[in-house]
Image (cartoon, rainbow, N blue to C red; front, side):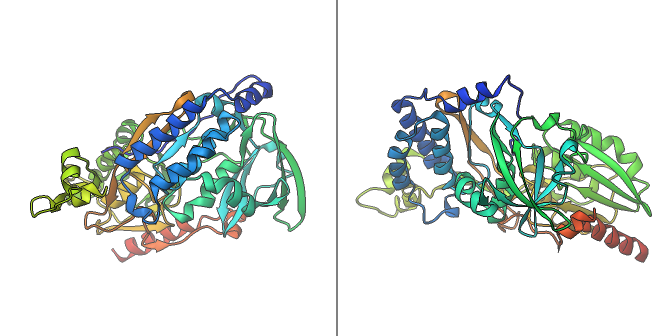
Length: 453
């Protein structure tokens, strides 16, 4: 079982002139535009696995509505953005439209990164050369003269596809700081000391080129990192499940972990990869079998659909009505995973949050019944599944989630996120004081657990 969560990378190209040429071109014909819209509509019609997420969506009517909209676009970029809006109607985090690579290459980033804390847009990192002007911990109030939430709601969120409402602003703030090479954005903000100010920044560098004030959490070379927190408690950051090496890296630190009396697994920055890798790691952390998620996927058999749509239904053909109405599914049961030999079983916590996605969420589902485990944090990303990739005109691509996953007992987590045992999140004040209340709560819990033993 494989779940993917794409992380976009931005490569360096020569000049703003290049970006302007790429982002303003109008090379797609009307036939291309109709084909791309129709191709996505058709594949989603047959293969989208989450139709019950959007019960009020008339997908065919939406397709008809978007035909004149895509034909009216004046640039290729505007066309792809209309496809994003069409895709966003499906409200699924594993169903997306991706621009051609050269359009991504033509975009740069502002010299900041952002977090969404207490319902506010907060600067969580900044290029060192800008730190006095726009300090870490500042709240962004406006973007190009418009209140920042209004800008996100009107310009960005209509193009964002997610099944979990809490993810809209968190995805939007990542889109907010990226734009065409050479363009600028005017930011109104309030510093941590309460003073309001304004600055105009350029989209002029790649994210990897800045001299960041703080070491970025995403700039990690290792899939697995071990840190000793004192009192015999070990913290293990697992940053990705994308590569098989994550399993061997974890197994490499197992001998050291056997000296721990409490264990913290931190997957707050883990955006997924291969859920099989997550299962391989969990096998070392329990002495009991555990189950993977249940799932279902759309099922279409042409003859069955015709029989179910027949004029004279009978007892032999009534069972095909759901398929005729586009509600036919194949169901896959969970399967049991056996623990590894000589597993490491200690009081354990897992930390996760809104960036915990896809295969990392699969890990949480598999660990749900671990008796020695308590989870801390906030709602996870709320999306996993097997995406089907398709090509679109002009070098763009799209993916459509074909599989809906559930807990082994049938509970839902798509669209709401996995919920922690202890819900706790960082506030703006916590961030400004460099406090990590989620980690602190996990440490306190393990100290109490181990003291009782």
